[in-house]
Image (tube, rainbow, N blue to C red; front, side, top):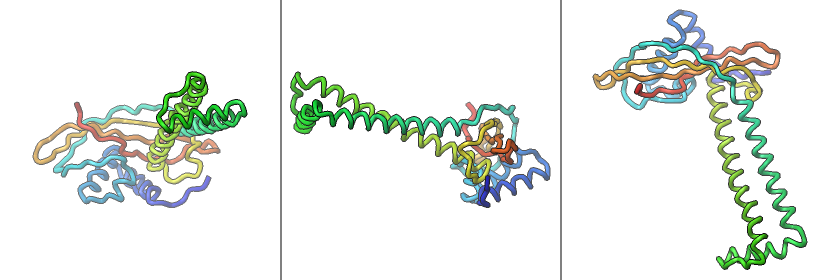
Length: 226
């Protein structure tokens, strides 16, 4: 496994250095978050947070820190799901092509296509061909949407994992846990204090040798407490 020095990786080293000075990981991350926010430092903010706060913050105070919760890291499963959907889509395309090219089917399918293009009624004798052709097309649209959704899910998870772990070549195969905790924060905006919940996430995963990788907390959510 090789790791390239990137902005997230350097920011990770900085965050760990700050943590060593005391104050706890929650306070360090939250202080860094609001410091970057006040300075309008988007580069720093996006190096460890997936959400921004669109109001000017007068003050903030940590009220309480919730317990850590652990769930299995989902990226390997998301990648496997995407691969399976892509394989299903390719198979549906092959099956449709093989069926449509059959000498007994092709002339009838050509008539169905022509009727569809003209908006004409499908003759009853061609309805079985029409139904099967429609089924292939429906499945094609369904699988293409599923593939697009799966790709988006993989990219979202990879981005968050990269913020926590840095750039890793084998990121998609790392196994372990996703650790999450909620921090209650009072945020003062325009003189009014309102309670919020900041959700933090980090990845407790191991490399190919079984060694646990260094990771940091990422700001994953910031929502009003209701």
